[in-house]
Structure formats: structure tokens, C-alpha cells
Length: 218
Image (tube, rainbow, N blue to C red; front, side, top):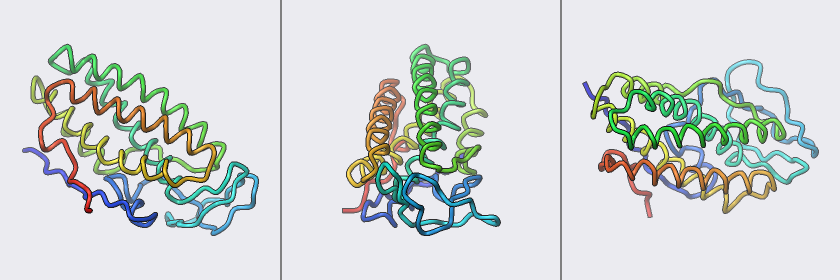
């Protein structure tokens, strides 16, 4: 039975709406600090002792303000790697065509580099990162893994292309709004990686309408 995916609408109208973007909202495993202000110098408050607490505050760091949207981007890039690199590594042996195997090899290698960058950035800015994919991402992973042959290829391409389309808008919004001098170049690296991955996935000829998120509201 084919899983019915959710088609989120991308709306970029301020930080509150940005945080609702994509399938990575409601991040299991990610504990976000709950204090409203962080002293200048990059030291973040300790994580909440109980359940995850949503933090919409802007932290003061020696590299400039770190907004909630900035932290959301860092977290979502980490989440993307947690499942996409795993599936891209799998596809190198499971995909039925040489083109999909090559594309998956390139995506896995680029995610490895991007993950090193996001881990280093999060350590400097004291942003806690998730250690496992979201429930929805696990559904995508299970769906891909359950297929074989050409169906494996098309399902792999569909879910990865959808996920890249979802985070692309957030990257652009953060690049245009961030005042943090570490997040700004990182958003450019993330933008280049996601754009390249979309092109690679589309080059397989397996991208159909289901692989695209709903267009943003105007």
C-alpha cells in the first residue's frame, strides 16, 4: 500500500510561519533551550529539564543575534542529513539504474560534508541537534526500503525531491533575514547543496507531480 504524503503549503510571512514550514516541524529528540535571552558571547541556557519547550526568542551571541528561524534552519539541515544520507547510501546498492546509483552517491557525499558543517556550527552557537529522524521521515524511509526495482528508484527520488523542495524556502528566508555572521554563510552552503540535490534528482527523469510540495501562498 502506498503511503499518502502530506503536502505542506510553504508560507513565508515572518518567523512564526517559517517555523511551521516543512515536515520537520515538531522535532522529536531536539531539546531547545527555554530562556528568553542569552548573554553575549555565545553561551546558551541549559536545555529544559522536562518536555521540549518551544523557544521563539532571539539569542545574543558574539557573532550577532541568533533568531528562532536561524536555529530552525540549523536543526532542519541536521534532520535532512539524518535520513537523506542514510537512504542515499542505501540507494547506491539498491537502485535499479546506474543514474540513480550515481545520483545517490553524490548526494550522500555532499550530505556528509554538510553534516560536518552543521555540527561545527551548532557547537559554536550552542544549538542542540536531533539525533534521529522525525516520524514522518521514518515513514518515507520505510516506504523507500519496502520497494524494489524501478519502484524503489521512483520512490527514492520522490521523497527526497519533496523534502528538498520543502526546506528550500526556509533557507532563502533565513539567508535574507539572518543577522548572524555564522548563519549567513552556512545558509549559502545549504542553499547550494539543496539546489544541486534537486537538480540531481530531477536529472533521473523520475520526478513526477507528487515529488513537489504545494506552491506557496501569494
